[in-house]
Image (cartoon, rainbow, N blue to C red; front, side, top):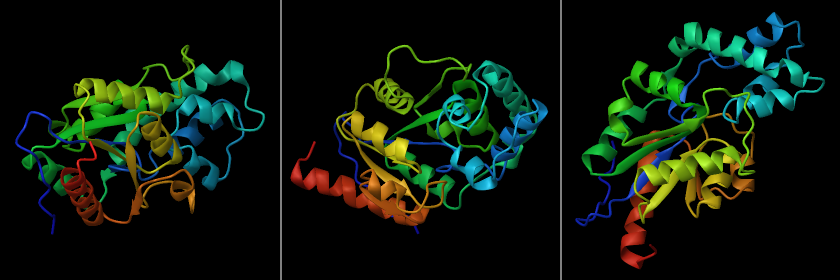
Length: 241
């Protein structure tokens, strides 16, 4: 059962920013199988499953370049192979994690602003939300460049930039929090002066979220709802923001 979440009556509504893969959507192998396919089709070594799973969430180009012996000159081709496979097969393999649609519905009913901040290319993020019936919950969607092989020229970590864009899309709410499953979600949130709830059902390694300073790590959508209720209620009482 979901808890009712407090929303003030002013124009300054609280906001919750969500990561996508590993937080809202279980890719169910759609990402790891796609990366393996792309590497194999280019005649490149495919790492073990644990390594592939660790590539879910961060920017794909950075994860590929971090593989031992990966040839940088083949980056664009591997990304293109992956993207084609994922569009044709991978998207349909995913599904929302248990309780996530109900949580988003409750947040919407309570007047929360809801944003997506994902390192998935923006167009695919929109398709994924539409495919799984979640798009109508979001006021704004922030994602990566369409060509994941492109490098960023401002030196800002990708997740930090994407969260900043999501906040801008919400007109810089005074009360906001991030929810994600990987270290870069927490670090990107902190760089934008946000706390971050970590979720244990995603792709983080043991202790990863605590190590980088997640406010709290939850193990279910119901526990996340309770945590958000407590977090924003405390801010209203103590005037934290």
